[in-house]
Image (cartoon, rainbow, N blue to C red):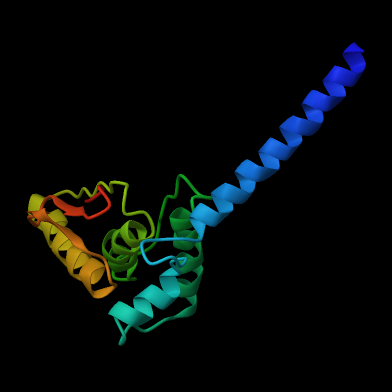
Length: 151
């Protein structure tokens, strides 16, 4: 009897786990408008003159994992003037907030002017990508989304 109860419990638990996994995948593929955000396509939409080189394709694949939630920590070590700031500090936060409008993104730098410049550009790319700003939070250093999140 106890063995049968254990098998029934394991069978039910495995079904629940499969259902939770399916729900997580569905949530991952949706955003405000019901579609998955692909960083490569987002960049083409909001920055049509962006030049994609082999290095950028590799970096975009890694940043896409951040948007998808499969990568929680990423360290970039690349030379100056290679495009890492534009991709990781401007375009990634905008795309991430379109994919997850209910979350917050923190942006920091060695100077307030630089981080405010990144925030201003990210806000503009967010609006160009179809995101809607919260009317009560539109300041450069703290802007919000209609979903309750922000930068």
